[in-house]
Length: 371
Image 1 (cartoon, rainbow, N blue to C red):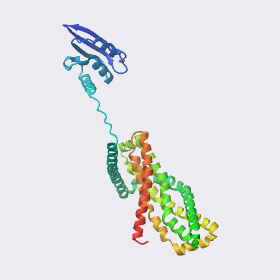
Image 2 (image 1 turned 90 degrees about the vertical axis):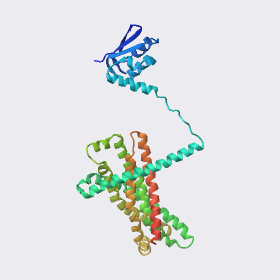
Image 3 (image 1 turned 135 degrees about the vertical axis):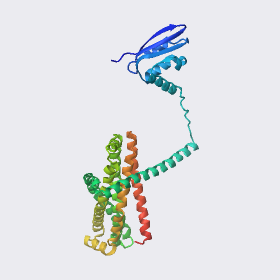
Image 4 (image 1 turned 45 degrees about the vertical axis):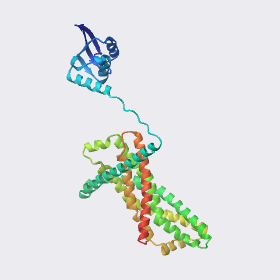
């Protein structure tokens, strides 16, 4: 049964002794601290007897130290070892002076922000290397023992991250192909070369827009989803629980998402190609009166399948980058909702930036290869 904090004050040979009893805790303290401080307000010598104190926490220790003030010395305290240690810790914390706040403004503030940004860049680079190391270890284990592969979540993620994205990918690339066809028809008609709109549509859609639009849509759709899912699990300490149970989160969470995007992005790229060409066919047929048969025959004769395979060759790289960025940002989420929001935003922004950069690198490589 909890006893309220109390004390008795006695005096012998000019020295006062305060004998404390009960629970000197936040719940049992009530006004005992104030009464003790009022009773010990003069400067006569003081001794404290805490042997009858049942329990004491930081709130009770702070009340005792505040009441005794400078008269409290270790040699005049009788208490159990744990209470003496608590009084020592609270007393040391009270004496610590707060660090002065240094406000930096103007040019120095700009330099500080640049320095923090550079330091954060190196931290992100190191975190990326750590993530890739964990991922390669998990991949090696799965290759060495295929029974470790989790097929059920992989197939479920293929449907959710890939197949469910078919409508939005098809509609978007359809209108992209239609816009490219409309621009080509308007511009090339002035030169009497409107028939070359077919080549313009075929090369742009089959080589660039199919994979680029697909990857950007999946960056906004799947990378953010991966970061939010893993990040919420990190906030709820579910990932820590998995590690305690001996489950590798990279095998259980990251690898299925990698596999899902690797399987589905080529299929989505093919669908985007068909939809983009369909949009181009419709506009060319309506605006230039070129039949779909003529359009498809000219695609086969003048464009060929090389450009389609060039676009499709970017798909595995795009899938790897989208999954890696989304999962890594999810693993970096802290214990607050603000961190989750920042990481989800960073996953989308970083993924789109990486997609455009990789597409530019592929363009330079294929230009050097003359294909």
